[in-house]
Length: 339
Image 1 (cartoon, rainbow, N blue to C red):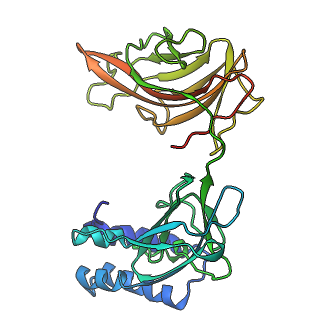
Image 2 (image 1 turned 180 degrees about the vertical axis):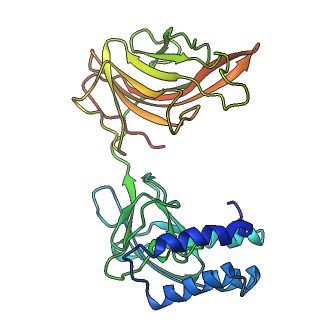
Image 3 (image 1 turned 120 degrees about the horizontal axis):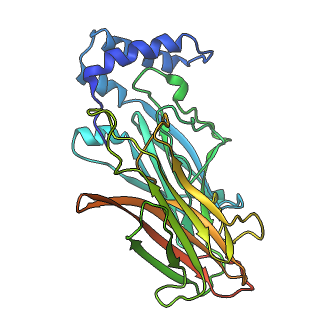
C-alpha cells in the first residue's frame, strides 16, 4: 500500500472542508473530534507524528456476517482482517488477524485503526468479487452486502466523516462466498495469443484447445497506434478497439458470479472495448473481461480475456491473454469449476 503523502495534505484539506460545508451529513461527537484533529494538522498546530498516532488509535467496532449466494449464513468460515494497513506500511509490517464465523455466520471485531480490510473464505466455497471501496466510492453501510472482501473506513484522513462506517449489531455487513455446485468435466484452455493485426483481420481461437475444430471465436483488433503524432510533445492518443465474434453462435458479457450459461441474450459479436482518440477518459488497454458463449450445436463456454501489446521491430503488436472453460455436453449449460 502506498504511504500517505502529507506534504500536500493542507491543500487537499482546504478543498475537502470547502465541499464539506455543503453536505447535509451530521457527524457524531467522535467524528467531530476527528475533524478537529484534521484541522489541527492542516493548520500545523500539531505535528504529523502526533496526528498519525491519534488517528490510528481510532476505535474500530465492526459487526459482520458470512453468507452464501442465496443469503444463507455460513458458520465456520475463516475471517481475516487487517486494521490500518497504512500504519503497517509506515512501520514495515502488515498485521493480519484471523477468527472464525460463529452461529448464523456472525463475527465481531474490536480493534484500533483508521480503516480495516476484511476477507472471508471457506473450503467448498469460492470467493466473490464486488467493487472495492475507494476514494469517492460507495460507503459500506451497516446491513449492506459486499463480495468476499472489502475495505471498511473509520477515520477519513481528509476530514470527510460521511465516509466512515457506523456499526449496528443488529445489521451486520454481509460478506458473500459462493457455494460450489455440481462439477462437470470441462475443457480448460488458456494462452497468450499474439499475431493480432491492427487492421481488423480476425484472429481465430478454438475454445476446444489445440486440437479444436468446431468451437471458434474471432478476436478483431483495430488500432491507429502507428499513426504519426499530429502535434509533437502531446500525449499519444489514437483510435483503437477490440471486438469478439462467434463463429456459428453468440456471445454475451458475464456480469455476475453465476456459472450457468444463459439460454438467451446472445449477440453474434460484441466490442470488448472501443476507444476513440478524443475520449475524455482515454486509456490504452483493458483488463479482465468475462463472457459467455453459446454455439449453434448447444455447446456452451465462458472465457476471461485481457489485452496487451508489445513493440516488435518498431511496430506495435497487440495480443490477448485468454482462459476458457467449455462444456462439451450440448445438453448442459453448467460451467462450474472448483477454482
